[in-house]
Length: 299
Image 1 (cartoon, rainbow, N blue to C red):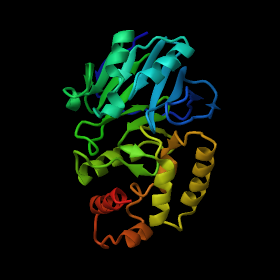
Image 2 (cartoon, one colour):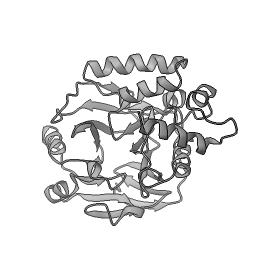
Image 3 (spheres, rainbow, N blue to C red):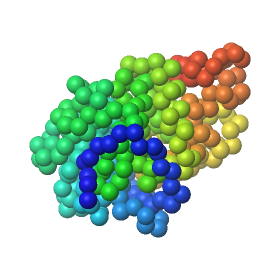
Image 4 (cartoon, helix red, strand yellow):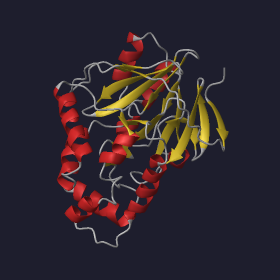
């Protein structure tokens, strides 16, 4: 078995069959996460655990049961990750970061020292990722145990942001590029960069599971409804999101198909959104996204 290896130029493989597992993890310091479990027929041996961190962050623990490889994506702090690893009697092989912000990398050094784990992150941000060992570029593929991971450059939120796409799992880890019903703030990038990044993600299959970096969905749903109140799919999703949050359950993962139907940052061609925000009729997608982002920043 090969794991932690890198290759380039591999095309995305869209498979029809998929399998995934999602389990609740430990309690976060300041909020509660109750169990939300899904299980489908086995094609992949990878289990995915949602680990709440800080106030509203999510880290994701991936464990390939066949290869015996465990990794964590975007550990903002070490303690919750260590608690889950102890509970499941697992070692940690890899730490993967989508971007350099402290609330996605804060646990890197402690976890690396404790487990001798390798840190994997974006090449464009290699000087800002604590403890980085492996720097990946757009289009690189990297083996996590038996699973192939494709790296997508997705700047906009930061200049070096990447997303990790596992075609066999039909799952993408989007960090702060794409949230459920929103996208990341443009701290270091432009609206053009963000639209290009979102377009890359939108090219993936609708059934792709989206694992993002924060639990922002309820607030994002309220904002989205303020722009597109007649969107029936969004109305239905809002009810579901409220029920999930009221019962302490995560709204993540979402699906790309649902985001295309409900997320205003992916729906910048919507006449209703354009009318609400006051986007000129001739404005292109980039101009429209910039206008929606500016409205969200003041929300």
